[in-house]
Structure formats: structure tokens, C-alpha cells
Image (tube, rainbow, N blue to C red; front, side, top):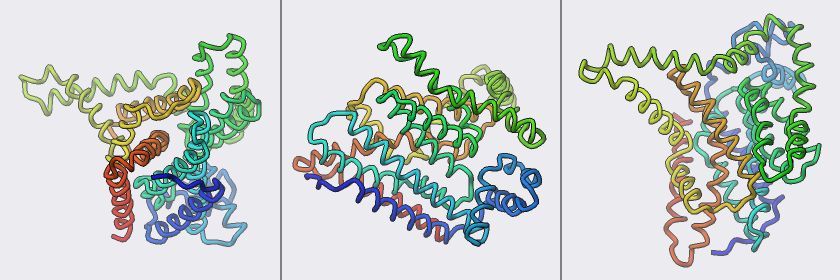
Length: 404
């Protein structure tokens, strides 16, 4: 089956319309989640000052999201609930568009044979993948600051990909700004902000001075932001110290806490669950349990169909990209895995939405598997039809659950 050559702006427009309609439909059938109540109360309290709003509840201590809701209410006279869902729908729209733009970059940076047709086709399949992603649609029902984090998280990937290709200051600046904004939505963004620039030293095929320049350019805004952050910390210390000290504690003592908690849970497993004959295997059993738990959680979050397509893409090596492109993508994947698996080990708990940044990154490989199935259409039609059928079923099931 041949893909039609479709202008990219048309594909972006259709994806944007579908994203907005899906957000409207999901939010119209949603109940306000507990965290959402906190954000709405904090947004309503902004009229009494940001200090007061930040003390309303624990989540309000990171105030950007609640502040944006309050500003949107002030500008549009919407209710706080409708303003929150409007904001979330806008961030979901940005997430879809940035996802498609990253795909466009990956196509343009790989094999250029039949480029126009191939890019249109993969972009269309990418829109299908992100718009029908069941867990991504499920979280649209929640009033949470994660929506802003995911949007700017993907934009940071896009900016970094362009930076390593063009080596221009504007892309380094765009990466830094997007990473800082992502951090203002979720404190985990600071991990990417601090760690990702170090991948500059992994470019072994470029001169040392080039690597140093790359490292400096990616850290330039971080240095400036750190100065302003110190000022903000002095002004809002009673409110921000909890989250910033939490980040500092994790950076300095996170692995130690993980080890201590693992040993504690292993001892509890040996004492309360296992028999005297198997107690000596408690450490091994707990380790295997956590690994299986984590892998299962990632697969369920991504969906079984997407997981199979992901493995297929990796096995067939369907994306022929440059070393720096692979370096950027895999750095984000591995850092996501590291952060979430440490969180699981420390808390013995892992919410689905904590894994969504990882899922969005892994989904970038999936359209290439669908495109490969589409190229085989004349020989065999069932792989593409079966894959799209399962994707559609998962989407419809998730939409049906919103009605229950």
C-alpha cells in the first residue's frame, strides 16, 4: 500500500483537532481527582497572594500550575474547573504536536529515499500512535500538573535533537528553557536539567574542545537560572525548601535510601512471608519481584500492542539515525528508567502517570514498525490490520471506561 503525499501542516491540523475533541470529551465525563481538588483550591487562593496559595496543600508548594489556572480564570472568567481542563487540553495538544515534530526530525535525519512520502506516512502513523495511546488519554481526566511537564519534556527532546544537529545557541537556549519550565511543573525535571548536559562528553568522535563548548552551551542557562533560583529560595524559603531539599536529599542520599529500604523489605519478606527453608533467598526473590513489577508496569502503561511493536522496531533496527540522535533518545530513556526504578525501590509504589514520560519517549519508535508493516501490504496485510485493530480496541476500551 502506498502512502499519499499529504502536506505536514494538514496532518498537524487534523491531529490538533482530534486532540482537542478527545480532551473535551474525556474532561466532560471526568470526576475531579483528589490532587485536582488541591490545585483548584490553591488556584482560588492565589487572590490572597502566592505565599498563602502555596500553603493550601502539599502539591501547592510547586505553584506554577495553580498560578496558571488562576491567571486563566482571571483572563477568561471561566470556572476554576473549566480553566484547569482547558489548560490541560492545551498542554495535551502541545504534547501531540511536539511528539509528531520529533518524528519528523527522525525521518529527516535518517534514510532520505522517498523522503516526502515516507515522512508523510510516518507522521500520519505517529499521530495515530499518540492520539490513540490509551494511558495518555486516560490521564486527560485528571487535573494534574503533569500535563505541562510532558509537553515541555518532549519539547526539550526536540530542542536537544536540533542542537546536536545544528550546534546553534538558539537550540541550546530552547533546551534549557523547556527543561526549566518542565521542572517548574514537576521537580523530576531538575534531574534531566542537571544530568542530560553530561552526554556531551560521550561524543567520542568530536574534538575535546567541541565537547566542552557543547557542555557549556547546554549549561549556560542553568547557571543563570541557579542564580535566580537562589533568590527565589530566599524569598519563598518556607514554601520551596521542602521540594528543593527533597531534590538535594535524593541527589546526595537517594541510592543509600534505596539500599536501606531494600534491605529492610528483604528482611521483612524473609521473616513474615517466606519459610525457614527459603528465607535465605529473600534478597534474590525481592530483587526479581521488583524487576518483574517494573517491567510489567512499563508494558501495561505502554500497552501490550505498543510493547510488541517497540521490540519489533528494535529487533529490525528500523530507524537509521545518527549517533547523536540515538544518544539523545537513549539518554532520556535510561534516565527515565533510573528515576522511576529508584522511586519504586524506595517507595514500593509506582503510579502509572509517573511512567508516562518514559512511555511517550518509547512511543517514538512505534510508528516505524507500523510503517514497515504497511510496506509489506502487497505480501501480507494481516500485521498492519491486526496492529491497528488492537490499538483502536485499547483506545475504545479506555474511552468506554470514562462513561462508567
